[in-house]
Length: 367
Image (cartoon, rainbow, N blue to C red):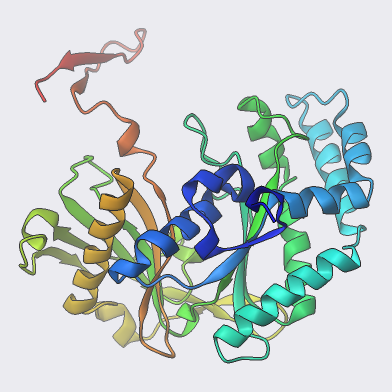
């Protein structure tokens, strides 16, 4: 069967050319599985439910017609109207069911993934991957949901449906309207990836440039204990490490800065289905570095490999499994703040009288 017709694709079948089919997150995971895993980068395996899977679910339940009715005449400047439309969309999806064919295909893939990891029902992370989220002029990062430590067929089915529901949050609806993205023509993909038990270990983010200055010859790594949600949402002060790329490439071990973060809390799995909770870190955890120098350098070397493959500054999420003690890259995408700035322009701000506005003065500088 032609790839474009499939409902499910494994990561090793996917490249960035498949973003219209599997979205930005899954496209990147597939690209890394094929291109950087052979170079020694560890990426947990998994599969993607393509937009074909999503559209078959939508049409089988008549949601294409009901959703069109909800969006008819929507004015996104009317918050009450947006809230009502979003609520209607989410409720309609919640009340819908998966066809037997889609269920069987999903469960068969989950069984294969479980067998790969020597389990009857392995734990997975289920992530929403919108096909429009990596448009050049837009960033949908953080708008869609991720469900962690999903175990078993029923939990998996529920998590997939929740990913579909998260596509119609009020925030996502408004943002798509602002970006001129058709609410009912853009599809959705879902990634199912082997879970890294960072709740028992640590996690963080890594950039192949300095996010403050845009300087491209360093790797910046943030690290904290537990699941990475706290770092992503800015709820914890993580450790911060800098590695100098230029001499790292020459075989040196250039960890040029290490800063201990407060790390007051860590997110772990809680008792109950799909739930998490924050607990206080110990005094030893707060006072010590999350990663060893060897682990910092390992991540930095992976950053070089990923950046060289994509030919651009990258924003990566990493995790350390507390069971096997190994590091993994669980997500990668182009860095979207400094990479969009014109580094040949220096902006100078001057304070003026209160009656006058603060205006930037741009100066051309030599590259």
